[in-house]
Image (cartoon, rainbow, N blue to C red; front, top):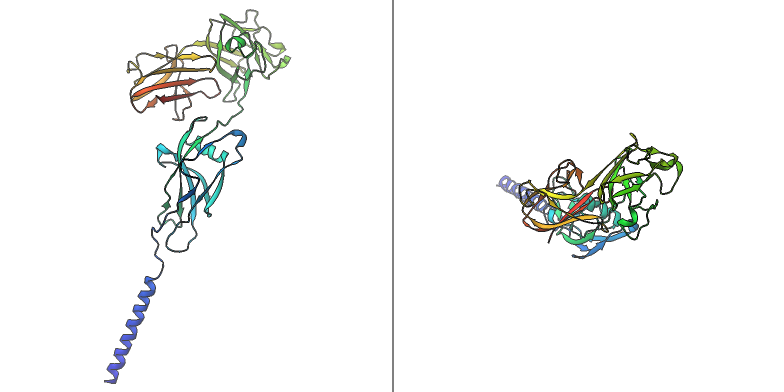
Length: 365
């Protein structure tokens, strides 16, 4: 009888120990989705205009509440940004931090927006969110997104260029002077820095005279012209004041001008630009719709009804000179890929060949 009581007592103690162990185990922290972080600043709907001159300034301080994983843990926060329509499919990362607030410079945001193919000078609707993580085996927590309106700036790259003073400059724009060697608007570029320069210039005269300059000044060794007295040889003379003026007949018009300093040659082509494609009337790639040139704004535009499909830009109703978009970044590539149009509607299309990188816009009205 005594042994039985001792045995029952031992069983009781074992049960109590097991129960205590279970209660202790139940009180251990269990990792789960308890509370994601939430952005507290900036306010939803805030707007910002970024500028190159203030790239180092703080755009804003992003702040958020701590994530709650059910126990104290070292949390890593990632601040993400994406275009609103892309819904964080492939966001850019603004910061990774262990704190719950961080100051972000304008230049950092600008780089991210250009990476996301936002267009310089145009307000972009974006969303920002914070993700919180503690371990690869634990689900990441995401804040609700905050919507912002941010206008990025174009990051200027100083591509090699040739200045193109000539008889045409004051006729192109009445605010300019002819034969001005310092005019930054009448230049051609070598984007690949390979000695081949090209660009588009409006020549208003039946025959335009010009020279090329390596620097914005008349210097003997840096002046380029034509060695032939006709000025139409297609050959360049580099140095010794450039010889004779280069003469371009066939104007007025918007000329594609190419100067190859390696081969010491030049070529030119008078161009009239249009759009063509399955989106463009008659919607079967058979005909161009001509665009209109604004010589003050230095862009080509057309407004017309498009249907969902594709377009390209081409000169002179020919495929010899055409532009598409290989990267989907609104930057044009010679002979590049067809440009998609997502939906039917009335659109204004703008073609800008004024800078070193050719661009376009398709805006629904």
